[in-house]
Length: 331
Image 1 (cartoon, rainbow, N blue to C red):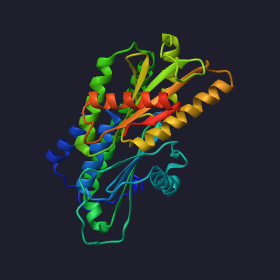
Image 2 (cartoon, rainbow, N blue to C red; image 1 turned 90 degrees about the vertical axis):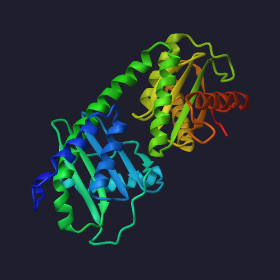
Image 3 (tube, rainbow, N blue to C red; image 1 turned 135 degrees about the vertical axis):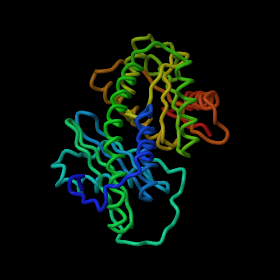
Image 4 (tube, one colour; image 1 turned 180 degrees about the vertical axis):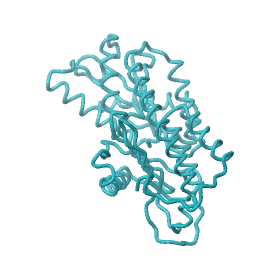
């Protein structure tokens, strides 16, 4: 349902409250923060066990599902597919299902309430010159209650949509720079610490992947790759993994990948995807004969600092080399 189709019972709105919530969204420093804050504020207005965001166009393509309970990527993807089909007549095919759908679990549960109306999806669409953005939530609030909330919902999504696209564009620029930058252990450590704080604040998952690069076919060989090889691998990682994953050069000719809202199991799936992409590129002669070995760690009670997460991934990388396997998870 598009904004222009909605009818409001009242245009009265608490301007102070509106200014507070939109200022918080505008101040977000990343796309993930924009989504976190927008979902939280939308849920304050109309509680929903599920909120999703979907965007398509030259401004980027992606989807994120925030749920009260844990949800698999396949389940989240089906919700996004349904949202695309549900809104296709209004968007005229501008919204498409992205290759990856990210999920995270809401840290604060929605209080159980007695059903008052027919459960259904609330679709809040924002059209921009080059991108369509959709925010959807599932609610059983009766129609009059929903319509009284439209002014807040309109203001939130019309603020959040351009902020999200701006943050996504800034993130892409940062990722491209990461693929070409010199090694900077301090930058990696600072970013990892920041993501740990964010994950612990919101109760979300966080994974870290340490990638070793070896010349030749022997993945157990020394990590002494020349800078141009490491840069090429960084670009391969950047273009293979999700837009939310951050790639850094790490000590000892390695790469570090911070994977927000990702549990270790899904990080291993990403490692397999990366190895498959490397094999395809090498079989077509587009990539040099190198080997990749990956160690994965995840945020848990025993690893809640940047150093701990890095050291766990380094230990897993060592085990992967010993076992002659592509990727190993720290346990």
